[in-house]
Amino acid sequence: MSNSFTEGSSSEFAKEQLRKSDEFVVEGPSLGPVNRATLVRDPKHLGFTLARYKFISKMFKGMSSVFEVGCNEGTGTLVLAPEVKEITALDFDLGHISFCLKEYKGYHENIRWVAADALDGIPPTHSGITKYDGGFLLDVLEHIEQSTEDKLISALCKSLTDNGTLIIGIPSIESQPYASPVSKIQHINCKSMYELKELMSKYFRNVYMFGMNDEMLHVGYHHMCQYIFAMGVNPKT
Image 1 (tube, rainbow, N blue to C red):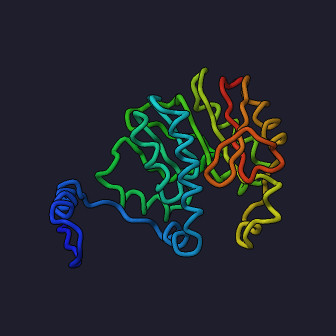
Image 2: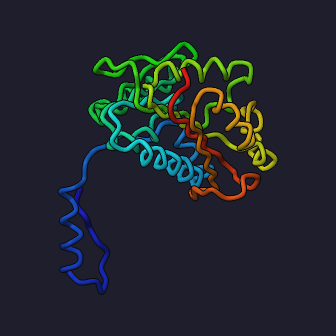
Image 3: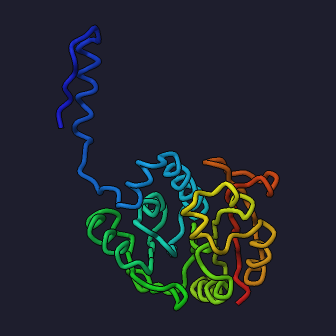
């Protein structure tokens, strides 16, 4: 790529300095159809989603092994990849995993993209690790019937080390009157902060709660949180 500039009063020196950025340009993956649609319909929401992954990347920085349940098209997973040694990213949607395997081939090779149902357990990492330091699921639990959530979290705990950490992020039940029509159809299991903590406390010795509004993470009044996180540490099983 070569930078060309319109005629004007800007100096040649400034333009030449900008041209030097050419050497840093690389080919890269594109957005998948879900995220392209988000970029067109509601671009700010893409920022909200990536901010949630940034929180995960800060919490898990330096870990040897992390799993993600419901990686979708993998855009957010890439935020975490530079911060940990290995990631197993799974989704039961074959189209999503097919996209990730094709689009991200050669990029962030510490990610293993796997088509699997987390209710049946977490596959091992590339190197064969079966007990993970950390795991997370963002915007997943609200799509799962309440009758199966215990089976899911129990399966995830079995894939964590004794000191492992699991982070769950979901839209709060209080946010649902303001949700989009498609979200209202898909969200069948939203919870309050207290309800999510009660669920996680069944499986972890320590549970820490956070709220989020847009990109802002906080510990403010929980009824006014649009999004909530539960971080469970030290599985009981």
